[in-house]
Length: 363
Ligand SMILES: *Cc1c(COP(=O)(O)O)cnc(C)c1O
Image (cartoon, rainbow, N blue to C red; front, side, top):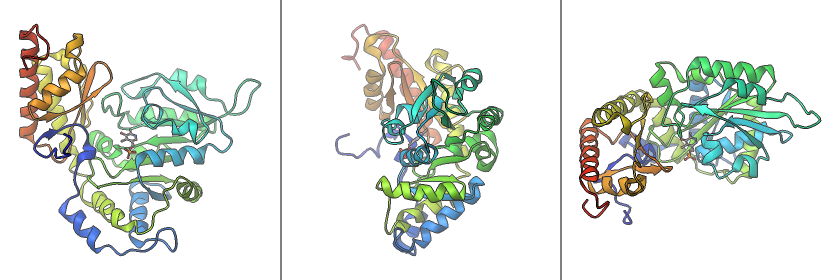
């Protein structure tokens, strides 16, 4: 792995490992360019227009990463500091280095969630429309779709509508971390705009299943995105000939959206195959998107790290996440055969673990 050459592996660590397509390379080479911090880059502008149309928002802005998009949204919504009501398993809460609190000065109020959906009673109780003797107002409510740390679950439209209604009643904007929102749209058989209708702002990644080499989009109202451009500059995201990357992102939106249903389907097949080995190996309900969690750690020696190593010996790369699970993510470079090989590898590792009292030596 130190060589960085992982191409001969079945790489299920993340959909971020996807390489640019031939059309992307070509678009990158032939893109019309400008200085995006001076007069503006025409290819970036075209991508931003397309993203706004697809999400049904007034405007969109190209950013370096999903994390940067979420941070800038937090900065925009945190007009007077305040609280961010967000689920305890949210990527923004767990995996973005605390930017929401450390840089946007939002105090996170964490709500428990099940399969990516927060408890609505607790959410309603946590919303504060204004200052009180003891508290500061809620600046933002966060939702996430698909929901990464729960294992790729897709919050229902009804749930998103409920959250939005509660937030609007308290005059609080909803920000959606939609890193994999196109996988969610495929799973729900709706347009992304129908999901995005339930938030004031959203971030989505171009660099995951959509296969662009880098980049994400932040979408929202004209007023918000105007402010967001200042915050992008402030956070070091003022790019120059960004059209080279935007060109790949534009091809991603034009050509890579519909195929995500395939990734979702292969993940369902993976879930079914693993469940057939042992139902305890997977979550009770499949996620409907492109993430499957493998539940391990019956014993200390057979923990996620041990499984990660054992799978690598079978040519399968997966990532340990937490103390009891590994995360497997399907994407464009994973075919049907790779799924069957992965299922077979899990079956054989499980047998080897079961047969051997000596934990790792026999593998
Ligand atoms: C990947 C991801 C992000 C962050 O994206 P980066 O581009 O890696 O910064 C944010 N939220 C969720 C849910 C993600 O899965």
